[in-house]
Length: 196
Length: 196
Image 1 (cartoon, one colour):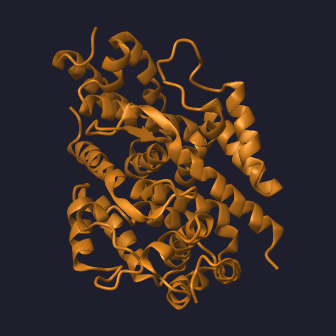
Image 2 (cartoon, rainbow over the protein chains, first blue to last red):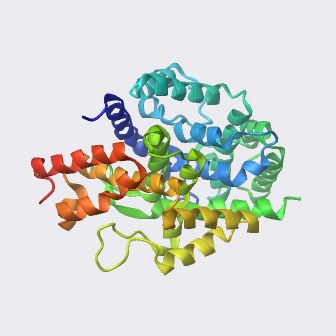
């Protein structure tokens, strides 16, 4: 007999395959196609591993990785919203919470609670881990847009002030990474791929 | 001034974007397209988080996650080889080692060494973490093939004995997951999606 809890876990594992169909606005580094949420989540986890030494505060790296790996699963139900969207909040929408409850709720009860906790902690953004995880989430598309000739900034007419304000979240996790990010943003203006 | 080590890390982060273009043979759960290595690695990490309680032995989950997230990066240089390939060994080829040295070698020296160690430990397969990581790596495509009407088994004419022998690796990491996997394999024969 296969334990019921294992079957629930397997159903969850199959369900989250759908994240591979959620397209982000941001394109891959060589800009030939958009990135999907599974690829994005993998990349954030790799960045967390590689860059963890730059966190301003002590962090539990395992928790950061869990955050970035699961954060976008809710988009299976809620869809991806552009960071610069004006008609819809990028984060913490009721739809996302409902998605989290449905999808994490497929897991055995205690495990579902743990997933909800980690997701909520990330969304709330107050813990050291959440701050560093959010730094990763803002840094990846910055690297992409600067690598692919302005990417979504050009496509959606996003200007310097908005980019600067949104990207400043990186500073909450890491002064060193923010210094680098700031340089990238300023250089983008000089190169003409970001309008001031 | 941006520290040289950080710039090396950023170059590495950009380089590994290429994993998103490495196509595996196995198709997604609803079988409409092949999976790429970034998606596969994300899914294995999620499986490790969800299923870690089923490991037969104590494991350091962070290490398992690092293993499954980085294991396929070498395929940027070496390409993906089908598990059932007959003309080429699936694992541990010289090309993969060369790929690991080049790509991990982009990182600052000490970090590069750590990445090589984790990758080598995974490939060698002796530690508890490597065994569990390999269980994940064999279980995901089994779930995919049983979800999508035989998938690569049908496509490449792979038969029961071969599947059984290759999938038995799951047992080294988890008796419980192997029991489940065995049931899936036997059911696949009954359903006619795997030939005995």
